[in-house]
Length: 227
Image (tube, rainbow, N blue to C red; front, top):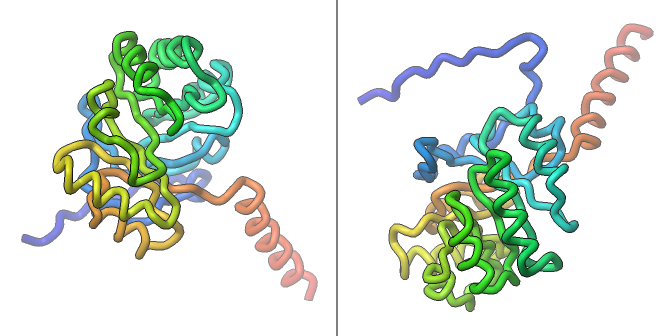
């Protein structure tokens, strides 16, 4: 059967956007509250978030989570958001409270860092009714204990070992949901999907990098007019 034609509609002003690699569509996706998610943009830049075709946003950043940041991202985006709630530097009851606040603001899931204890995961599980995404950075992680504690989805971020970690999880847990970093190329993304990832996180260029390309284009236009 021939692939169905999909019409694409773009505006003149919004045609310039961050488009994620097409290869991500080969992932199976994860259906959360009726929404199928395959591509997840890793960013807290509201300008980037507002101008992307990603299915969802994963808003994790290297500072203590603050509700005002979550609120700003929620206001800016028109797609589901997975919110970082700490678990590394930020620990204990604060992580649980941040998780509840994220749910109240409309997050589709909360993301905890790799050092988060299973006790805290269990407390979050008993407090909220949205998915708990636990970050996995090593293949020596005790996956069974993580699942028993209440983990809903694994978020594998193992640098060059990501596909290997995903493959191990998939072998032990054939149907457990896995989000994973895809890496910088179509080949690394495809490798991660083939290893068993259901959804892929993608790190976009920064606003500065995108603007640099545009400025070079503007300079070329002006120079061509004056020569």
